[in-house]
Each structure stands twice: as C-alpha cells, then as structure tokens.
Length: 121
Image 1: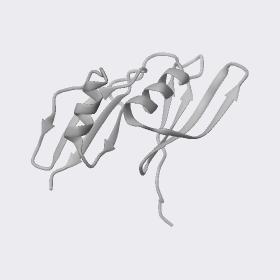
Image 2: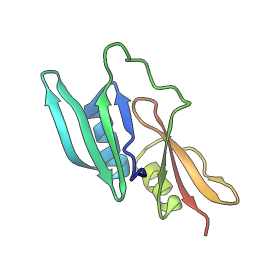
Image 3: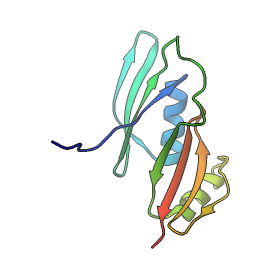
C-alpha cells in the first residue's frame, strides 16, 4: 500500500475572496464546489498538476492562519511567475536563491504563506 498523492485543504474566512485570489494570481480553475445556505462552503481547484481545496472556516476557527503553515508550489519558470504576480499588483517577497532552489513568497487573503519555487538545473 502507498500514498498516491495529496490535496491540501486551506481554511478560509471568505471562500469567494480566496477563490478569486487563487484564480487571478495563480490561474487555478474550479473542478468542483459546494454552495450551502450561507454561500460557497468549499471549492476544489487545479492549476497544472497542482490541486487544492478551499473550505470555509467554522465559526470556532475564524482566526487568521498561523504563519507556521505554508503551501509550497512548484513552477517551471519562477522568475516569470514572480514578475507576473508583481505586475498584477500582488505583494511578493524578494527572490531567494539557494544552491538547489529559487523561490519567493506570496500571502493569500487568509494569511496563508505560499512559497513558489523552482529547482535549479
């Protein structure tokens, strides 16, 4: 038996707002969604080979996510991705270069830290 993959589930205070961010900033498309009595409750998204879900936080858990949480997204052109996001007005961190990666950070509307990176060739 082995794991075949994973789908991160990110809690959101406003799923509609977060959905807009992921669609506009990172070009995610909606695979499926659930609308309840109080609006959009969860949405399943995909961009390339990357999938994730956004779900509405319960009333008991409406605080911003801790900065200890992070979603790491791989890209095939990190410099272009950073330039694209910056040109669209998103606040991106400076590029960090290590011996094995180039990456930068972006924060979503719920305070989730997204690190976008590319392995050095």
